[in-house]
Amino acid sequence: MIATAFHIPFEAASATVAAILQRVDEIRTPGGYLRALTAKARHNGFSPAPMILALLQPDGRA
Image (cartoon, rainbow, N blue to C red; front, side, top):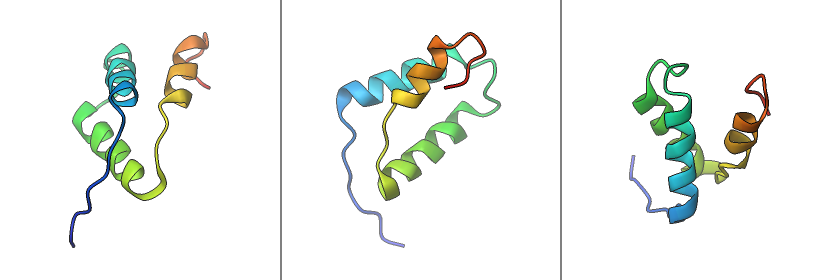
């Protein structure tokens, strides 16, 4: 499989890492979670908005 280059804007990457750090106790494998998000970004695009909105909800769901 040949890897293709893609670009995630700095702000989106920063927001994603911040959201992961906010929920690190709830995520079993943060590295695996980030790899899964990266794969999603490669194929379908990615927006950190749902992650940020989930942090704003009392129950943690968007």
